[in-house]
Amino acid sequence: MNKLHISIFALAIIWLAGCASSQKAVVPFSTKVVVEDTYTLIWNGTSEAYRFVDGHWVRAENYDYQFTVAQKRYDNQWKSIKSLHRIHPDYDGKAGDREQTMYFDIAYKTLQAGKINTVITSSIGDGVGISDPEFRDTQMTMYMKDPSMFSPFNKYRITQKYNYEEGILTETVELLKEKDGKEIPFMKNEEKAYIYLKGKLNQAPTTFKNTQL
Image (cartoon, rainbow, N blue to C red):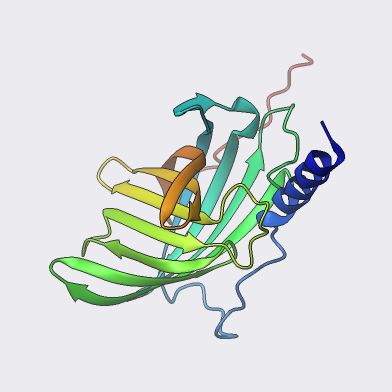
């Protein structure tokens, strides 16, 4: 490998390490913090990672992660905080820290032909999306802010399916390189999460088990 190729590879690694940094947080629009002013859902799930190689999706287990999403739903606006943890012991750090936090502010604007147009502000990039009125099937497209010319992707496409009756959210997160009007797939994450709602417990959910008796 010549020096030029080594330099390009090194720059790509540096860029990847910072692309999902939790430092790029969305600044809140208000200082108001009230727990009971909204409908809050908690999603808990895991993701399987795939890399696009020679026209095919190939499993990339070392990029798998588990995650939680705290989703606060207002009338026509959602605010979400997503926290993820790379679970594979051989994770190489090329997609950022093993622990990451992402922020999303989604504003639902207008209803046209049965679809809601949305505007997205997030820590990974800004963009637009569409959804049905019950927020069961949604798609969001976001572009990275000031991506490096050596970065392997500059665009996110997130496709979500909320199955409320089963308490399951399935989501595909695609990382794409858009250039000259064409899309080149790079990686994708197939996520599945279960819903948690506010409630009450009749007793402590877990107790210490003494295994030394």
